[in-house]
Length: 397
Image 1 (cartoon, one colour):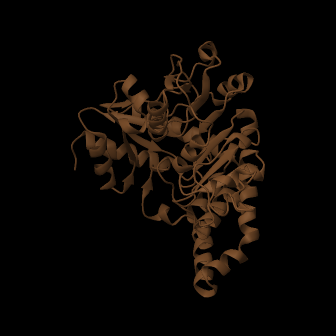
Image 2: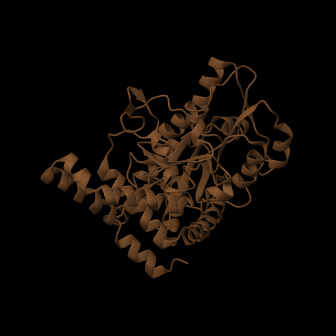
Image 3: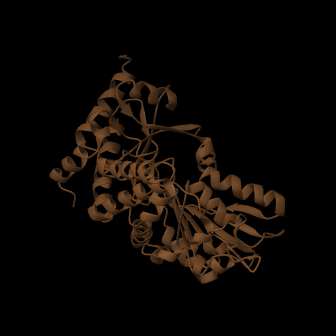
């Protein structure tokens, strides 16, 4: 459990908590002073010693980041790769799969992230493969029992966005993973909104690839992301682009690395990766289970408070819900609400169809306002958000 005293201490270590009320942690969370100090210290080393020399001195700390990340996911360090964005890493892993051919089937969740979907659709159009949406239960979550009926020898990939960007649903990723593993089908999980908010154990998820962004619930820097690629699938993943790190020339021919670093390049932002490591280490010290429990309680309070406001509709699906709370104000666009709240020093998100096109279209939604919580959030901030929404509804400012 995270105590009130711990929350105050963590907020005191977060400069942004003094200046804004931040409910956009699903977009990018507020960085800690410790993470900032880590980044700045390395940049100062680069200025003092030279960037290459500073990187060489940071070798052990960079290795520690890989080990911290592996421990976070219950993976092995050689199954971890880093990159500048989750979408780039996911796309690189997808492109590395054996070529698709006409008749191949790709099964995706209804809440699939729009960027992943665009990548798959482009490949399907080029190769003759097809993309099919997995069935959902009444609560909107993936229906693993009905999914089992769709699986045959033509299914080449199962892809699921675990926690969608447009609401509080938590898909049963482990149930899908059990089906995929039993059928021997590669299974990709987009865990961009999950890692750092709920426990993510790749062994119980039975996934082959999992990606997440550093900037969201892990509170890492922008421009960082992590990829898990299982040692089961790695030998069959042939990256489209290579460099001297991922595939050094041996006797004149490229030799692809045996580990997940086949998806990395020799050039990367060392300071940002060290910052990501600092953020992951902090999340592990706090405890992901404790983080989930606090966020879950705060989100339940926010949903209840929003539902009590006139002209507000809470749009979240699912039984067990995440800390992403989606809602709408009658007669007002999400972008307009976002701006009016920003004018009051309160930050939320506003998502359109492009982010989760299959689900938004199926539900007849064109946009949602999104308030996403962190363990840094407080009851007082929830009250302030709801008071501001009440003022907006009443036409005050």
